[in-house]
Length: 507
Image (cartoon, rainbow, N blue to C red; front, side, top):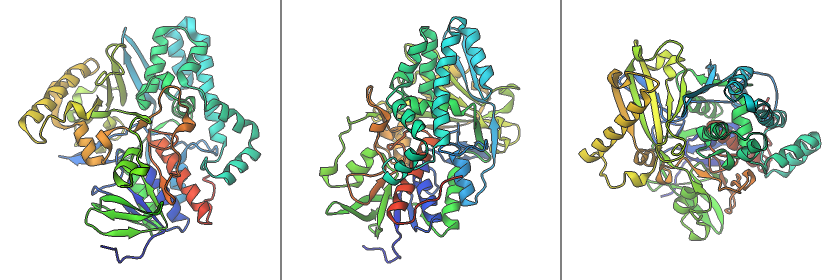
């Protein structure tokens, strides 16, 4: 069944942040876009949902890219994108990125104040004070380079030549740093095993890998920017970001169609022509952008087996078991930080369920909960294999979820005594939930680089199929909201130049 509507220039599969960013920038440039989204709301992992007067973040809650420090370049992307679209996203500064609670009674807050953060580490490890300064300076150098280079596609020769000509020394320096890992760089300066464990959890907090497996460039973006642009929480929750991107798309004439699941990318003689939806309708465009994972794109949506991607080409990140709790506000003491990470034992921090991620965004934005209440969002890594023996909705499935949730709540009472008695609303999500709602293979957090692979080996925006492009966490630079935002900017930049309408620099 062929759609009778006018064909857009670009079809985007999925309304994750990477796809929405690409669509918004293309639409603003006059390149028509049509976004298809399976769910009745946008954002994918960066979305919000409501229950009984509470508005929860479905996933992400630590946000970079909203700084206003006036520098140009690849950082502060959210600020620059929304300025370009003429759309406002109000934010609240968060003074602490993450408060870590680690074995050996080691606690430290990774705060906006760089001097205070490094000072706290030096107080704990006075014998490593010089190494701490040198290592974090390496991250600052990456940040400073990136903040001076204009955003664009690494596959756009014109862009690369322009950047190389304008910033030759910084371009070479960044290229060299792209082959280095965060962990190996740390080991140049630091020997203390406990401190190296901390640097591992700094990486694991967003990359779900240890520091040796984490590219230095990624670390420079996240761990340096917290002291420059800082962490800023969008008023109304994480869903405010995709909502604003959708507003920008529609403002310039684009379309988002919800509850419209793409089941196939239509490929003819190696060229992407459009998509087929679950209702059987076919829609055609000059280009298609997939926001799905690399495995979902080529092993499910593309039916030609010649393009199949080996599931072992990259590591497959785990999924999550999540607790969304509405609690009595009295359980959270005054001065409590929003984001926390809890590790009980260094031997198991990177095992399934070994690290607890915790946030309470109502500390910043009380409007997310009824008066006198707070939100608690806690989650741990998990895999589909732990849950596939259960039938969805069965009593056994519900009991298993409750048992796991009780264990996580009990462990979290290390920093919030009395939490179990303060819970008034509980919503639980397993990896099966992520798989179902996000249309991601095994509910995965996405592909991770194997040890020894460098960041330039991540897939880029182009694919082996002509006119099929990719955005999202399967593409350079990887996981995290600001990273997938960059992938969307890069993808839009490449397509716009191909269409003869190069994007203006984001300022």
